[in-house]
Image (tube, rainbow, N blue to C red; front, side):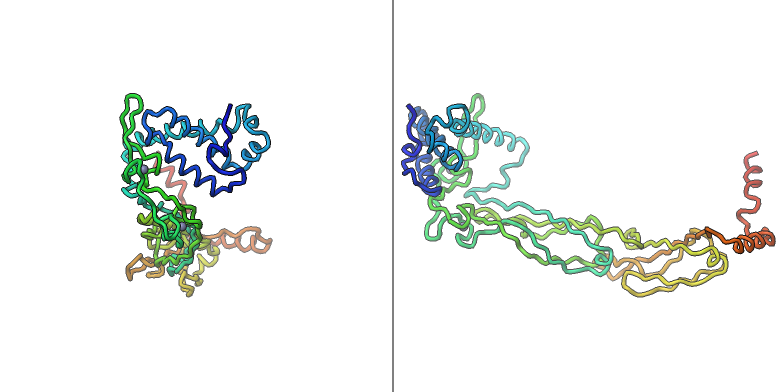
Length: 373
Ligand SMILES: [Zn+2]
Ligand SMILES: [Zn+2]
């Protein structure tokens, strides 16, 4: 005959979540196998407590139990899950620790007293080339865990204080033998914190941290390059129980520009001009990233691929007074959709053209033939 779940936890049928949790905590600590080595009766009670709590903390399972009693879970679901879940948890804990030690990681985040460094955060930011040119002060909103202001991160209700864990005497680690292994593992009672909170803070439920959106201002210096990582030390998630905060990394990408391509501090701009401008010469203005206009003079007979350099009109060099150059690369557009009159004029133009007008194309194929024969 199975015992009543409420009776196991010593609570009334109307107990709320908090009462359940606190009853479970007290009993679990008392009957924990680590505190009662070799005591089969304590182990059995401990399993029952876990099972009862696993069921009653879940509103759906609790409702089913209230209605049908243990019969609600006799088809395999529910109740048994508690005990199974617990067993698996114990194992994964050990193996995680073995792996953690082999990989050289895992434990570094934890130090004695349960102080834990907060996680690093990544924030992806995209800026325009103009913004990279001038630099900017960006306001960003980062959802992050911050230290609970009610308990100042201790996790304990104000006026109470966490108690040293009696299972591990505050070290957060216990030695356990599992088959051939004798490993040091995280204390199962306090989960490595070394302390037990009997009266958890109601705002953060004993976590010592709450999730909030923080507004941060980030200074993006002029000349910053695509792919730059900016580290804001201590602006990551809050540490646990007074541990140091993690860092916030801003991963910066610069959007491709409609007209300018960047190569380090230099900028390149491809400018198509008409065939007649290329032949007769002319002028055009380009708007540079500082918003001013620069005039480019195209001399008579300019060829495709010709590059003009506008000195100092490129990007600023990060943390320096230098600036790169702007290169204007000329493309020549061949006229299309000619009218009858235009065609006549071009034909006439061709008839009166000489070798000097087209030194590259005149005789190109005969020179090539000669070369290879
Ligand atoms: Zn709190
Ligand atoms: Zn402990």
